[in-house]
Amino acid sequence: MTYTYKTHGTCSRAIQFDVDDSNRLHNVRIIGGCTGNTQGVGRLCEGRDMDEVQAMLSGILCRNGTSCPDQLSKAILAYKQEHGM
Image 1: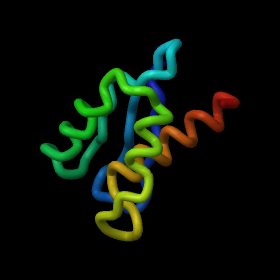
Image 2 (image 1 turned 135 degrees about the horizontal axis):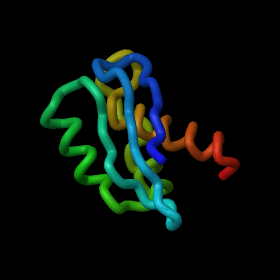
Image 3 (image 1 turned 90 degrees about the vertical axis):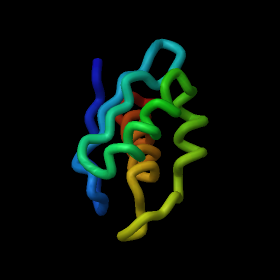
């Protein structure tokens, strides 16, 4: 099932991803934002452990005290909170 997170403070509008039974990310899509960068982030996250991605991307800044990668880390945190992880 695809999880959708509404971003805050970035050019992107939302982030979508799937999580498998091993807590690995798949099909990471950042909606809006800089196309090349957001596609690159999605590809680099494919098949990686969600905790690893969250730690790696948290705190990366672009504007407004956040960035698309930072918002992905927040999306992962929200997913984990909603799923009792």
